Image 1 (cartoon, rainbow, N blue to C red):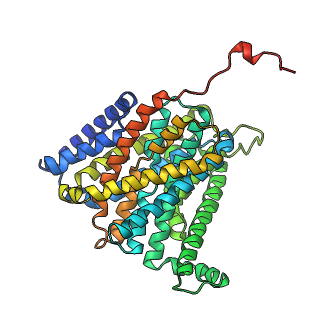
Image 2 (image 1 turned 90 degrees about the horizontal axis):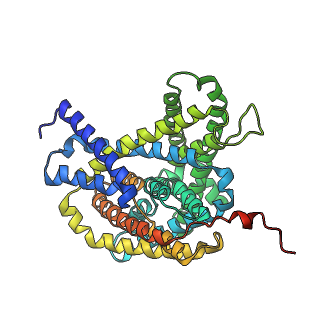
Image 3 (image 1 turned 90 degrees about the vertical axis):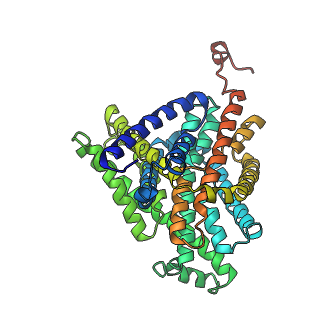
Length: 439
């Protein structure tokens, strides 16, 4: 196909129609729309050669990052901390255990099975370790699950993208040497802790301290920005294009946190959660959740960012499928199956260990949580970022990531099928509700 502006618009329109149909059908077939988009990209690229990746390769990561910003902001807007407070600790324990054990397991697999050095192994494990909220959240929305279980998995998925971005950012800073010179803070802290540069303890200390530094910096800046923006919204929410101005604030916050050395993607999610959970400045007793806005504008801001994210992510996954090479995919088949086994084992251990924090789960519910480990947009974007930083050492990571995304989304299909046997939370009958208490 000759590439010109008319063909590009025709291709974009057809892809959006396909993405809409795949998203609607996923509610019936349980097949994630990501798999349809990836398969379309393979068909248009490596199979039919209708898309020349030379035209789109440099912008693929940009599309993915933009979609990730929009999805994380929308996830923050949907995070009702007031109602999720009872389950938030269980979700955080599950999220941190799952990411930590998966990171350690994939690193071990890369070092001993793939004969890689420690830092490249960590850089491979970091993007593959996080669950994709852009896939989990729509799947959970389509299933009739117990409220407590759904809340835990929703909160975990919302934080999963941010934790993955935080982990990759820390390791890239350590690998490039920037982490050792971040404002002079890290060397001073390590020296205070009695850790000499170059020691194994210093490396572990660097990762821990830099992780905490990026987390706290992003948290503080995002909450501050959200506090200020909530007070500006009454002045602009009745003006035309105010949703675009909010989108501009999100992009400026992302760039500002990145420039100061924080975790920019995590900050975007916290900014959305701050807006959604900040009380009305004019009436501090009012309910949370955009109380300062009329009902219609409240829906508009979420709808605007969700639909924009749908547009960008659809195009991104098709481009990701188009840049895949069959030769590289064949080479990474067995490593990807090994990593899939690591993901499954680490997730099973995480679910069992975190049962203390989220009690009452049935064996079928725990099985569902173990299978729900999709990799998607966040994985692809972070993997492309890692490849860009180490193009010679980790050129294979794109094909490996693609294979892992495919296999884990097959597990999502299996999880959705198995979820049909999970009984939703029972509702008491009226007679039981009004019955007198037993003495």
